[in-house]
Image 1 (cartoon, rainbow, N blue to C red):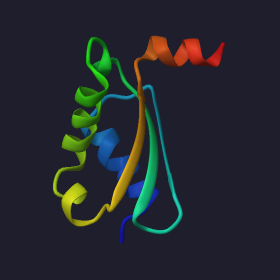
Image 2 (spheres, helix red, strand yellow):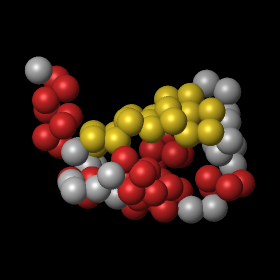
Image 3 (cartoon, rainbow, N blue to C red):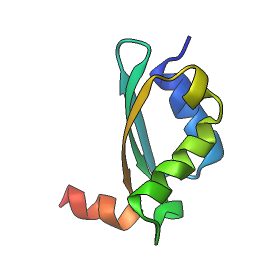
Length: 81
């Protein structure tokens, strides 16, 4: 069964993050907030592709929908102001 925690663990294992949260309530639709230095200089599409790579086949087989907000650490700090 896919859980927010299992998705969070997959992302954390494949991508260095400063902040990572995953929420979802029905087992197939999830929302993630990912803050990573790896996103610096990358477009939104490239950032999402990095996250999808960490999930591998789970995106095709287990996870129906994953909504993401991806930020660099600097963008994340600016949001907190």
